[in-house]
Image (tube, rainbow, N blue to C red; front, side):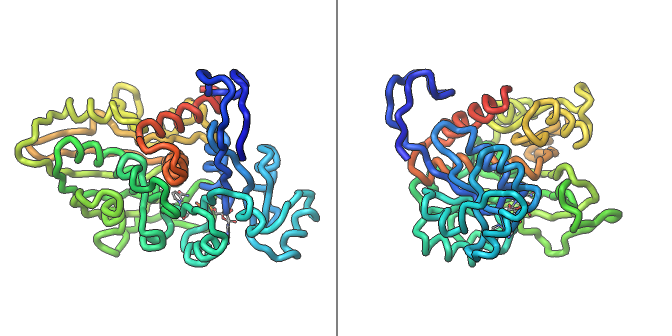
Length: 366
Ligand code: NAD
């Protein structure tokens, strides 16, 4: 849709008078943990809008969409399913095909492993599409993270935003790689057992190693930054709030880094927070999440990767550090940058990140 925007009427756009702006029409297929967050992040942007979201049926998530004025569509084209919404008092405009007909791009936030069938549906509808990290790289052949390979998604027809863990690895390892040209990494993903709203997963009283060794996380990083040599292990622990990564990196022998200069490098990266745990009394994920709630984003989200400054140590060529990942939200701004790249709007990842993050901050009045 092309809109005429009058000076001062569009928040965030201050230096233009009458301008033709093409708003990117975004559909969200699957309005759960990730879908509802991506929808809000799209709604926050000046260059894109939510054209509709889908629900499988009239569950409580519909109320959230109604409150946001997001048009509701059904994940199916089955008339009986579409009409079931009105019985519960929700207006359902149509089926998924109706939504795909009016959108420029669809962000698929359905549960993992539905990708093969959904991708076929998107191709038939001739629409651009983005999948999430629960799908395999091969589904689109293009995995994405803002700092690693924003440009490679420029004008692409399909992409997959990598998982929360891979996004976390990419935020801290890619700038390190870019600064020294060679990295060998061994890391352990200490993973939350389930999301806070999920009662179907565990363990609830066990520590469960992932017995597929090495785990898929390191391999997944290599889909967006193949130059980094990395192996990973994973363990699930009974918490719902965050993942923690324990990371060991071997730098090239001729590196010029100190512990302090690595900390400075990360402090200058977008979407990375480095804080001294002992001084700030943030010594666990519980306090990190409390700090995130204080920051004021919806759902207490933390889009940034959190590094404990006092847990970073460079001994010779070997770097040790811990980082924490808010699994439900670090991938959210990445989806926005990916839309912008695929729609051919912005090639420079840092410009897109700034647009995305400042719009989200304004949206929440931060
Ligand atoms: P979720 O279960 O919270 O939400 C999925 C939503 O899709 C639900 O509302 C469900 O009703 C709906 N749905 C069911 N069948 C559908 C269909 N056929 N078509 C469209 N929607 C359908 O799942 P989630 O956690 O939001 O995960 C979505 C994707 O994001 C997965 O690929 C997952 O691996 C990935 N991801 C999840 C997290 C996380 O921590 N939750 C983090 C990063 C990436």
